[in-house]
Image (cartoon, rainbow, N blue to C red; front, side):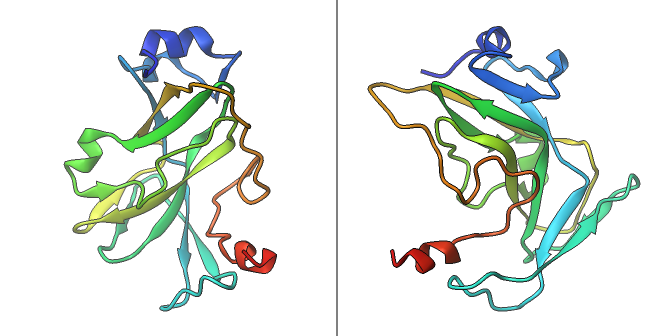
Length: 175
């Protein structure tokens, strides 16, 4: 079951935290999240799963920034979210998708108990100008059935900014 927008609003401050929260971003069954003004790009042409990959920061100016096709940009939501008892899910807004802008490659599925900013895996079909603060995606919440363990991974939980891949840590554990 997916929570309605009114139910999301009713649960704000308890089982659902969105900071900052503004009622104007509530939809019939989701909440619009905005794009922060910073992006990360990987510096190397070949990325290695077994090691940290170098990134550099790009600030999106108020007048906008043109993204290039074929390049992966890591961004983050302006909003911090925390969820208890629900599975948070992230999807691009249809208006964004109709411009050929993708906001995640595979990571739209959150874990119950996740706390932090959402890292966005941004790609575009053709050059597009983006702006800081744009309503870029929407979060929605599924109820969860049965007993569960809350998300507590040390890799991404309680992040404070854009998170490049930390997959290399899995190799360090010997998994």
